[in-house]
Length: 241
Image (tube, rainbow, N blue to C red; front, side, top):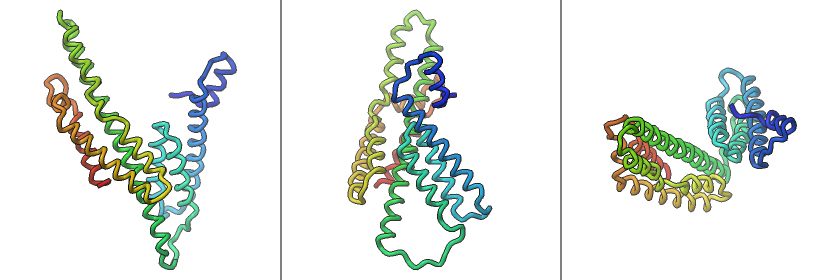
């Protein structure tokens, strides 16, 4: 279990441990997130059992935790702010007049940001799962052939697996981050189109990668690499298109 900020500072004081400032900053932000999340959860627990916004609140908190788990504290804390706004709303719906067009536009913008946040989490999880599957297969192949006299030649082939996902780089994650942080609807739409274009590039990469296709049908160990990636990109194409 990772050390907390207080535990890390104790080690620094007691042992003179050299900890990079970036590590301390990350732990400080993690501590801030944890404290705020626990406070929000406690406030939500005091709401009525039939609180009308509970599902929305829980969804925001879960997505915030997902970002925090990946050390992405800017979107995580932003989602906590959104959660706080839900807590401040009336427990029961009120008979309010119809919202003006500007408010409707604001709600649409928030919906877009939710889309970008969810899309990023899903794609990041798909890439990590694919990498894990590739590493699992490589380990199984090494265990199977390591006693062979010509294992060095086999190892060269296994090492090619390390680059099989290189075409699925960080650009889509970065673009979805940019879209989430965009400050105008026009910028959001432009970044959304750019993200959709990268999705198409990734789909073409997978369609033309014979090694990637062979991983899912290998006779050594059942793994799922190509199929989940393709499914994730197809879903993203539908959301961003």
